[in-house]
Structures are given as C-alpha cells and as structure tokens.
Length: 227
Image (tube, rainbow, N blue to C red; front, side):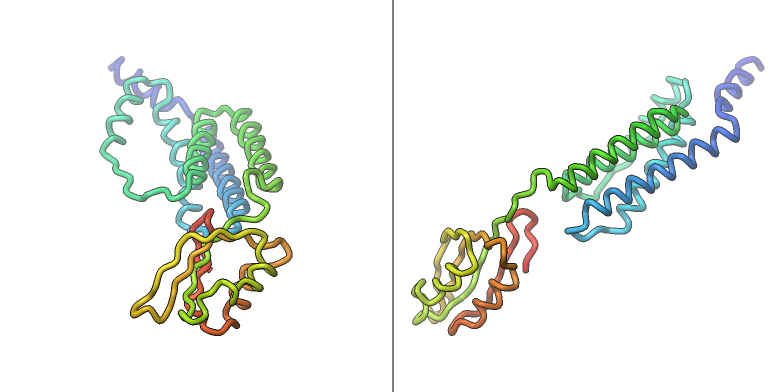
C-alpha cells in the first residue's frame, strides 16, 4: 500500500494548473519557433507539416518531461519505448535539424517548469536567429549558377553569345562541351555569376533571343533549384 502511495505521489508531482501552464507555454514557444523558421526560410518552399511538427514537438516533449518527473526508472523506460520508433523522413537541410533541437529544448524547459530558461533562453535564441538572418550571415552577395544550354553547331563559336556574357555576367567558367544527337547541336555548360544589377530572367531572356540557342537551364549552385 505504501509503495502504491509513493508511486501516486511521484506521478502527480505536477498539479492541474502546472500542467496547463507548462503545456500552454510549450505551445506558445513552439508557435514562435515555427514562425521564426518560416520567416528565415522565405527564399525556399516551406512544408506546413514541418511547421506543425515543430509546435507538436515542443508540446509533446513538455508532456514527456512531466511524465518522467524525477523518476530515473521512468526515464530509462521511456528511452526503451522510443527506441522502437524509426524516423524515415530524410532531413534535406541541416538548418531543419537545428530547429528540431530548438523545439525539443523549448519543450524540455517548459515541461520541467523552468520558466526563466524557457522564456529568456528561447527569446534570446530567436533574437540571434533573426539577427543572423537579417545580416545575411554566410550568404554570398551574388551566388554562382550552373548555366547549361544547347546551340546549333554552326553557331557554336563562343563569339555568338559572348556579348550576352560580357553584358550580364561578372564571371564565367566553361565546364564542359559536348555534341547532342547527330552533332547538329552542341551543349555548353558554364559556372557563371550574374552582375548585381541583373537577374536570372535577364540572362535567360537574352540568351533565348540568340539564333540557334535552345534548352536553356539555369541552376542555383547553393540550393540546386532550377530556373
């Protein structure tokens, strides 16, 4: 009977008000983290499911921390239970992993009821993230592109498209040249950097006007997105 009583006391370590406050705080922090991810990810497509996952992680981890409480036995039991879970979704961006850990940490802080760490810690990290994004930390002023296009063999001389390159590109390096099909067309591949005052569309449009040029592909080197 005493053992059952002690177990009950440990299990009910958090009162109803504590549970509501902790989970609500975890939910709010999860929303803020998801919003920061969305704001700083404005140049790429964002999956709504990932944003929802960040919020759910914060709340679920907060609940897990309350379930564990001060019980080491329950902590080891939880590790054993979670070991059967297999995550099959490949993370494409290392930045996504950082946000997942951020949501986990926020949920842990809220779950144990350490409101100072939860509020000040998450708030300060969000400030750092937005500051780095605003300052474009680690982003090149003008990124490199892989330019690939096909040109009729009788126009394959670089003199036919050299004026466009000189006008729009700050630098370009030829990567490969190969014939297509029966040799009527030649495929040219370049690593290029566009001048600041021009855009990707300017380059594609100007090349498209050249006689014999077709199949233009422009791929951003940093993210592999095709233009």
